[in-house]
Length: 234
Ligand SMILES: [Fe+2]
Image (tube, rainbow, N blue to C red; front, side, top):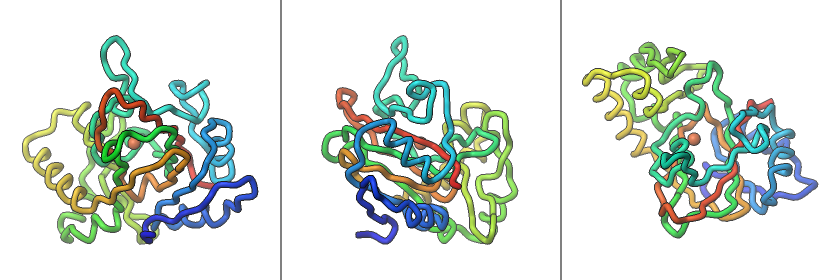
C-alpha cells in the first residue's frame, strides 16, 4: 500500500476519527472499501466528517451528484458529465470558499485502463518550483468567474492550491504569456501525477485545497458511474 493512500473498510461500526484526522492533515487520500452503493449511506458517511454542499443539480437537490455521461440537447452538461479526459483541477474553484474535501464513490468503473482517477499533491508540486515561481503564484491573481484568486496560498506554513484551467480560460481571454505559464504548470502537475483505478464500492475522500484531481477519458458507451459529494471538513 502506498503511503499517499490509506485504506479502511466500511462497516456500520466504523470509527470516523482516524479518517477525519487523515483528512485534516491532508497528506494522504482515504480509500474506504465496500461502501454500499446508496446515496443515503454516502450522505451519512459525510455527516460524520463535515458539512456537505447541497446543489440544485444534485440528486433530489441534496448532497450527492451522479458523475456519468449525460447529454442535454446533444451537448455534455459539463465535463464531469462527459467521457473526456478531465485534466488536474480543483473542484468549485469559482466559489468564494471552495469545499475542502471531495468524496467519489465508484458504482460502476470504466473498462480496464480507462477512467483512471488522477491526483497531484501541492506539496509535491511546490518541490518542483523555484522560489521566484512560487512567489509569483502566491501573488498573481487569476479570474475564476466572479472571483480573483492566486493559484497558491499559504496557511499555517502549508501551501494550498486553487486551479481549474477550464474555468480560468472560459471567463477571460488569456494573453499568450499567461497561456505559456499555465502550460508550464500543467507539465509540472503531470510529473506529480498519481493514478488510482477504483473498483465498485470504493469511496475516495481527499482534500480539494491540498491536491488536484482529474481522470483519464473512457469510452462513451461505458456505463461508468461515480457518486460525488463535496463538503467542508468539521
Ligand atoms: Fe472534479
